[in-house]
Length: 461
Image (cartoon, rainbow, N blue to C red):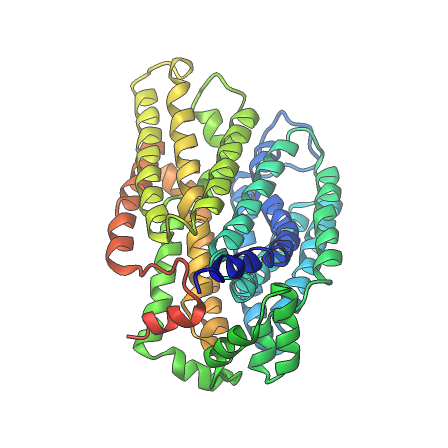
């Protein structure tokens, strides 16, 4: 028996490249979503400046709406995804998300007034809502348990890469050219992902065992899929696509507890101020009065995010979900406290140039901490904890709540800043992040390395 185990392990190791291929194809769509988020920082700074040569001028109020409307679009996208997923499948929903994303770039290219930008941001929000409501489920369903966290973390990191790329391109490209460049990954995604199979879970949910087995064989290649097919059938046994029956099941206390658990994790992302800090990154750096060009500083922060996200991709299935989240909470809290300290020193009339190191260290630490845990792990947990017939509804509830929270985070930043000033804004965010570690320690079960069926058994009570 001992002599056979190495061969079994070897066989399993050579069958995961197809799963990485699917994740790579999806990452092209995620990069497009990241570009839509990264667009805001450089172009809002330009569109509100009296010195930049741009075709439009926005007031602070209009800029706030442009920054926030993407998140309202996410709510509509999450609803569309929830209505369609169980019927047409995760794959088709993911492919369809490419349509509103392409539309958003066409609107941005053609923009002659702020209304065009409003429409563009809503459209990209719809695409983002559809994408993220389906992506974690799809990857969670096709992945070997040993690499599930890594596949999802890779795509979360791809979003960071898109945001960094957007920030890097913004100072050098017109809005029109930015739109043309951003269409490229969107088109490549539609072409490549159309060649990837649907999730075997979707086929089993509709009773198509032959297609489910064919899909699983495509993702596992040489491996014997019979045992996994039996486990998948057990996982989806009794699952229904009737939304009203599922809603009754969804409202049971144990299932609501899972939703609130995941939503709580995402909630920490928004109370950290991550959305607002990235959207207004160049403006925050400018106000910090440091001796570094704002666009360069934001690019440095973005590179730190990518490095941290890549590290998380390697470690999430080794160290575990809980470890990364606890480190993420503590690190981001320290970073925000240091950033608040910088603005406190500025209020005491210290020279910003002599303090350049302080906000740079603070923001690099914050971005590394968030990207290493708080960004990738909640999406991984969301793909794991729901039973088969409630995955779609649970993800809809979480994704729609995320859209509202994300909108509120971006929209309230400027009014809160006007009310209390920078230092208290960042100290508030930092204080809130202190509660992530105890939340994870006391409430979050460890799911690393477990199959979806094993996770259901462990979280049944």
